[in-house]
Length: 464
Image (cartoon, rainbow, N blue to C red; front, side):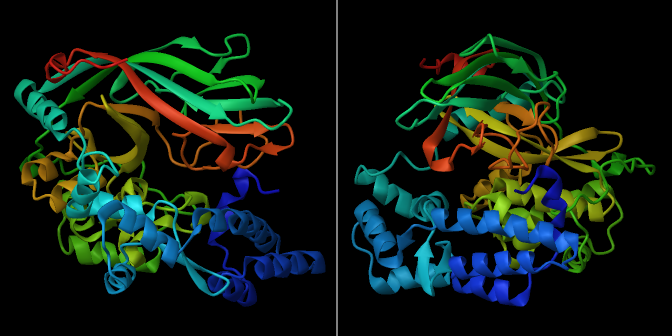
């Protein structure tokens, strides 16, 4: 079975026959070919590790693409009304719907229709009017009010209380299970983090405050709920950095490669040169990279990151990706350009619109660490919101829980088996004594219990 340390072998290419079987969607044949290769021996150990990883991918990928084209079309019609076969075909050609081959037949991703609504406000509005989904765009007035408050005050401070809960669907007989739930780590904008309550206090292990991917680890049975409540202070300063003030001497930390996803491959080096040209000012270079991503990389829900051999090349080649893919592309291009850049992720806890999210930080002296949220910037571009587009270069809104300060970092109490998401932790992890809890048998929910200190929230109290 693959381990966390094996992830670096994703850069090893697959044998041609296995690659052909995978592309056609004959996953059973691909698995048989892998087992035969490994059993035959005399393979480089790096290739053996890569093939073991591929076996995991081949089991995960089909689960994420359950719908035939006809089934997906009927789901869409149920949401928005009449959609012609020709219009649906155009969606496929336009890459509005993610698909793969399974046995030579196209199958659509499980959340492809939801992604279509997210990136097409007109269709989302139709589904809303038919009572098939929530109002498109989310509670934007609160977000705009928070941004205005940051600009007016310069610095805002808030106290958040958050509850995260994992539910596992047990079998006929309850089984022992270990669960890792994400909690805020103390660095950057978060401080004074305190776990106030949890479901299994007698078994709880809370990671150290600065743990790069901070969790609370709980032991119990799968027929029990696992939850944690915690609170933390958040401090956000508004930045409008002036390129004329950039210092000549700049640091070199966080400019290295990190296999398998942050690598300076030929296509990424070439793309970076095309974006920054002859520019030498690091702040201006970072802005050029941000502008390229928010205007040219289409937002799209992704399959499990674990199944993507190289996320940043995927983004550059396919010109699409979700918040994490866009953040990684920004980080990698910044590092190629000599600009320190790093990962940050966790939750967006805008009351009434809680969810997982990824973004980036970059460093330019004398301003220090600044934020870049390419997916929120891209959303602003789609809606013609120039002020919001500009804000998310250098800043993020105050509704963030930073649970992960590093990409691809193990927990303080490491799982015995490969995590469902070995790169990040927002939806938690769970495992039995003999293997991980299947993805389809567990669910995760995050909720804001209270928020204080922000004027924009005073007239919009949190409903507990």
